[in-house]
Image 1 (tube, rainbow, N blue to C red):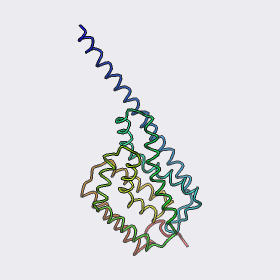
Image 2: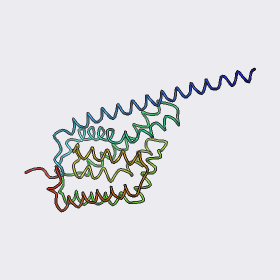
Image 3: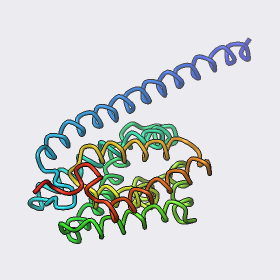
Image 4: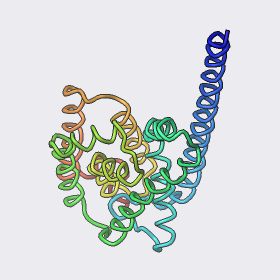
Length: 234
C-alpha cells in the first residue's frame, strides 16, 4: 500500500516540475522577445536620419553606445534565445537569465566601444576591402569553430558572447563599413546572424553566403555608386 501511494505521488511531483519549467520558459521567452521588440524601436529612432553610407558619423560617445546596445539587443538576442532557454533548463532559475543576457550584451558593448575608437568616415575602397576580408573569414576554421560553440551554447553569458562575436564579427564589420546607421544593412545582417545561429552549417549555403559577401565587396570597390546608399549624394 505504501508503495502504491509512493508511486501515485511521483507523477504529481513530475507534473508540477514540468508545469514550473514550462512557465519559466514562457516567461523568459516572452521577456526576451519583448526586449528585442523594444530594442528595434529604440534603434530605429536612434538611427533615423543618420545613415550616410561610408561617410556616416557616429555622433557622441554616449549616443553611439546607447544606439549600439539597442542594435545588438535587437539583432543578437533572437538568435540567443535558445541559449537563454537552455540556461533556464540547466539552472532551473529565471533569476539567472538577467545575468546571462547582461554579460552577453556587455561583450557586444565592448565591441561597440572598439568600433567607436577605431571607426572613421572612410572611402569605398576601404569599405570594399573589409567586406572582401569578411567574406573570406566566413570560410575560415575559426569562424566554423565559433559558430559551432555559439549554436551549442555556453554556460556563462560572457563565454557565449565571446564565441558569438567570433562567429558574427565578419558580418558586423560589413555593417559597420557599409553603413553603421543603415536600417537596411542592419536588417540584412540581423537575418543572416539569426539563420546562422539557428541552423546547422551547410557547405552549399555557407559558401554561397561567403561568395555573396565577396561579390558585394568587389562591387563596392569597382562600382560604389551602384550600391544604394553607400555614397552620399553630392
